[in-house]
Length: 364
Ligand code: ADP
Ligand code: GN1
Ligand code: MG
Image (tube, rainbow, N blue to C red):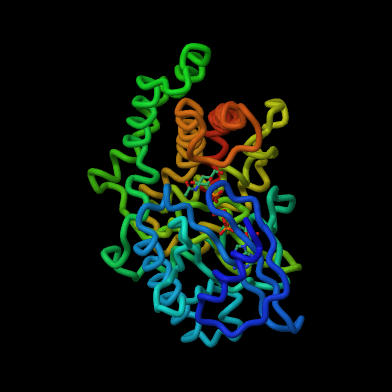
């Protein structure tokens, strides 16, 4: 992306700033993120981000969700006497025309928000303390939004973690076989399909309302939390998918990355093992924040939700592979296949630890 073009886009936002540089930043699979450095050195920096409008089909609605939820959290922080509010909740800026995004000539959508300085992102967790703090941050985030009426938010990506609808997309991809990859991958297809009955139980419980819908984050990868230098969690970021969802999806999705000793795209399956101390710390931290609102049925399903999210993600990566790699950014040919195999192995690892995982929840 041309730096001059990025300068022009930043200038369309309602902000007084002197740009010194703009450079590519971050490792997300969906959006394009650029750090905007300003002068003088002590002035705040910003992030300009191209939202992927092929995936987020209603960017205006998505930004409305972000504004409603960050305002709600900001009011709570202010009411509690928090002094560093802008380090604890994301601050998005409007464009000069009042909209929460700017369009470029190609019809892309760009948003601008405050870069929270002196913080760091963890890609692979090392310390149980980080997991405990991350869990408290995600639990606190859900708690802060628990009194926000669901009707105030749209479903940014409809059926985002709906196992039944994800399964349907997967079956459509198998039938269409757009990239001619079905035949050589039958065993992967079987591994996913043989679990479909048990894995869709959460969605059936949400549909019959025996599990509640809440306002949730829906993308609780560990790199969507900012930590300070002492491992304290500062702020939950990447709010594109904040919308009605299940608390279980947030718990399970976090363990998808946190509980795995290897990255989500680890090609060497032997390296994929379950990090029990991290899981224990996460469960303890999450329950300490969320016990005030979780129902007994949610608590009962916390460990299972981790299996579900690994299954769902394996199916999503593999659906994209069958469709010819059009959804996730990939770094090499076959990346989505490697990701799928790694998620399936992680699912097996979780399956063999399920009883121990349930016991941890009971003890937390
Ligand atoms: P993606 O949806 O592509 O994952 P994110 O919104 O998570 O994009 O941003 C990508 C990266 O940019 C993050 O992992 C983090 O390193 C950094 N980042 C995002 N928001 C902030 C912020 N408010 N302050 C500091 N760094 C941030
Ligand atoms: C995407 O944008 P990023 O990289 O945080 C995806 C998540 C997946 C994740 C897998 C909107 O997240 O749902 O779990 O990749 N986001 C969207 O790593 O689809
Ligand atoms: Mg992210």
